[in-house]
Image (cartoon, rainbow, N blue to C red; front, side):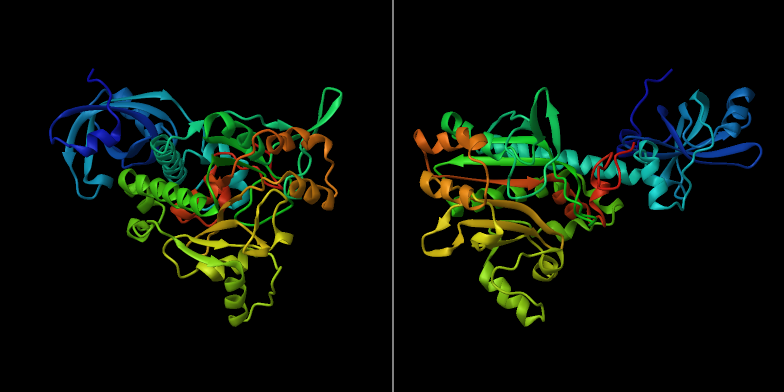
Length: 432
């Protein structure tokens, strides 16, 4: 038997009349008596197969007639051009072996979102989910390639932590033997500790947020790409962010154009994602929103609606800098030129997709950091180790956290963030 090839490879360099062999699952099928038209999928694509009486043993023809969608099959035959077939070619089978039969598939063409989520273990077989997962893998590959070129070292911080307050967001609490611990919301503080030996570090870890948010951009478990850099101020931090995001997007444009098109994203719309990105001060944004009729004032937090208004017409991400102290975390450095604000920046994705990165220069003054913790009624005991980083050789440094799924949602032009992960965890869902 001819060695099996991926469908994508068969279609990439088709040779009419050549004997080919593929393996995959039945994507669509119909029979007209003596002939069966079936479309087979694998991880690389789909191709039409015709199974005709007289071209293969009768038992295999009958098996092809009876086989249901999602049956796994092994097919051998000759390749021919057929403009009506997906991809413009079909395999005329000389062998059609059912490897694993399927019962009637519970997902049909039109189904509710809830049913698709209940059957997520089956829905991830869809071509759309296949495309999203490939884009996501390429986004991460692009990130790692750029980070290596920029002398960042990947590290592995813990997921279990005793730090009970990071930015005032609710944590998932658990019993850790005879103590209380939490699932991590951020690796930031551990990364800060590691810059003293490695200068530039990053981690890719799951983060957990117990926010009761039911929006298209919130997950309770998501993948967090976080960086910390010694000897770097907020301006340098933003340059790192825009170079990293641009590298991620450009990698997708090189390798995943077909997947983007399948998902409804025109690759041309991503070509402008190149540094430098626009920079707007928070105060400037507030005045602009007021001019558009928003009821906001200095000190207002920016939600999804406000962020959408800022970037709806943009083609590349936008930075918003210098947020007021009261809306950001205790560890961010005060801007000496504007003491009411911080040396920080949020990166918003274009087209209204909202925040994808939050970052800042970190406060290095021990007294100021302690005062902020006390002002927010945060117990100092569990932060003593963190304060040690300021006691013993503190260094100017900055960092940021990037929500991987938020980037993927924007790049793939997805309506909801739950479609960026194989098994989404939300307020309402922890199954399957």
